[in-house]
Image (tube, rainbow, N blue to C red; front, side, top):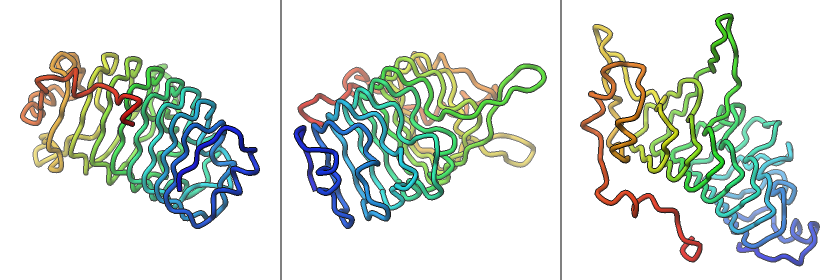
Length: 262
């Protein structure tokens, strides 16, 4: 189902979306909160939202959790502040496998901690040209007696692909540890402020020696950025070097999509 239009009322938009729809594309709409137009128990599996210049939030209503959704693409939503509101209903996006977010200039983080705990099926994260983004996961910070902050471990058991391109203000993926044993591909382009990869890329062998995850296949990035990374384990950089792929033309490879081809 493809929906687009600026002249319909909020009630008319809701009536246009049937409960049994499985694929939904919304373009050039004035709606601000997507969840207000959803029905509880929908069968929606794929959803693309593009060029909705007033969209502020995808899931804000506690009654709508899109538990069947598998793929989401959000493109050119300049006022989008968050994927999910403060209250996260159990099962929210529990079947989500892939999320692609591009040109959403007001997003400061992709997921809050409460939401990421629900995303056990997530296989791919792709974020492009979101200039305000500072963190991928906004975790709850706890300050200990020494004044240092830390966050609980996040486990993404099925994550295979992480792509981060043109995120000039991205300083952190997460301020705690992320365990993703299935991670195969990491792509990072034009993320100069990002200095660490807390992705659980290592396992512990006998004798307490670390070794790269058996699932890891490649790390694609700019050479200059790779050399600027900071590591918690002194030997980490050396052990990951064989997986490094430095594109010959990273400017073209990491360029955001044009509006005409999205």
